[in-house]
Length: 312
Image (spheres, rainbow, N blue to C red):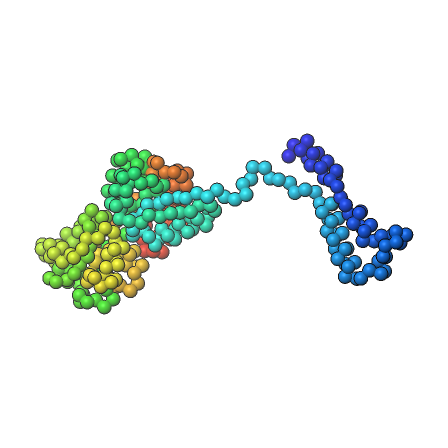
């Protein structure tokens, strides 16, 4: 604080009126004034007056509290908008809460959907800060349109596929071969959705084990093509399908479902990229959130939900 400012503050304090003396005279008048003396006053009244006088004297003695120039009284509220693949719902919800706790005033708002649907929303003018996709194809499409910060896309997690069945297993599915049995009701994601594309790639690989017509037989049993993986989980959970193919992380979150593993040699690994968007309303926060997800703390949360680390 400049010297002149300090002097000004002291002068104000010294010249401020203080009426403690008047109150003291009122509480303890001289006998010659003809007012009741302390000996004739009630004890409660005297105690009350003493308390008031002490408070007043303290107020007169205390200097005024200094004002901290330039320091905000509260964090400026900001909203970080993240568009993320549906399979990230549970893990990213946890990550969002952790980020908010570390950044007072910041709210993380998520839009979870199929990666292809999110890409279409960007193409139609949707505004967000961060895009997290379940495949590289959608990220590359968004980047080609100039919607992603150049060179900013980074892989942050990977995933594999499993088959899910209702708890009572009405289709009596015991092995992967049963997926091609006529009459079985199977639900997949649409082929344009990353998990739908991965599922069909895995079925193609399984032809080597179950015969050249295996994939064709399985696809003949498809009763619905869903727009995101969470809808597959919901249909199987409700018994509207006998089986579905989803990410391992979605099966892990749906504890009531039975899972059937797909061997590694026939499975497909999904790699998830994310990036800050070029028109992000909060570019600094966007880059910081990406860094947070890539940090050891972010990776631990992802692995808690069953995601695998990214391998070269």
